[in-house]
Image (cartoon, rainbow, N blue to C red):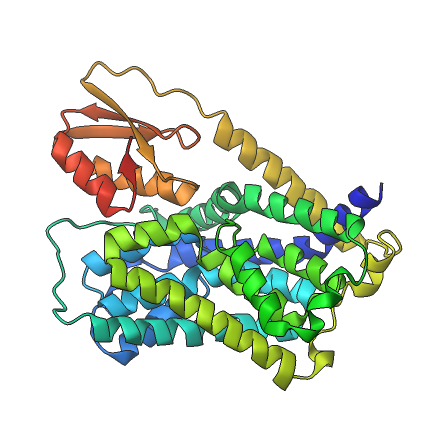
Length: 408
């Protein structure tokens, strides 16, 4: 029962902020046109790198969803530095995770997290620009990934915003959010208090350990929050917890491989090295240069006894709404109907590397633009992709690889 109480407590703390974050994410998606991003990132130099980070920070894209978007920006005119900056900043945080960070970890983490993403992205982008000697951009294949669907009028955009924020966003991160909550609840209940105090005399070792755990682990920026909170409750320092928050969402093996293949090995090395070095440096600053009182957990007292904290009416309503939305999004995601059998030529292939609704949408949208293609249907769970019409095999492969995926 303690496990259930801990899970419910964390869910109730995060629910109001998550719902707010999802709403803002939907508004950004529906009301900010995709060309806005490309227009501001097409110029070389430091200012484009800064703008790429500032644009990426509020966007609610996980590390898998941001990859094709970064490739799109690069192919549509962004400098290598701007694409790298966007790639580093975006998965570390977002409007949803900033709100959830405030709810569980307090205002200091909620402020430092986006600032750290900005600094890290700027450093990585400027290094990538220095490595980009030729500055040649291949625009033979245009990849489109950000634009929202065209809608008629204000109310059409409102509908798109609500659907994106409360359905597609939950389809994208819902699984990872639940995994993060379950892991956090298990840590809270089953690991003794003070378990990580061993690392108090070895802060760098603790941060290296956090990196070793974070890099192979895939968890979105929101799902990492309850895990970091639970580890802090068991004695892990705020700086080491921050390393997990920063490296976990942004640096994982799948992302590194795709970055290397699509943007180059040097960019992949800059991407990974900047994230790890910056995470440890900022973590050390948190532990040694900032007041401990800044990082006192808002929910520490309530979680100490697992079920001593009461859940307010507003939190309870938000929790119920969030759970219902999660259930609906999962049902909608995994019970999608088979496409209607069209009397036209059909090509079926398996695309590897897709992990969220963003990936699915990118593949469908870009393959649909190929000459002779009438429609495309992608099953996210299996990767099975059906292309209706006369599709050129080499063009299909080129589009999929440009998006950062591969064909099995």
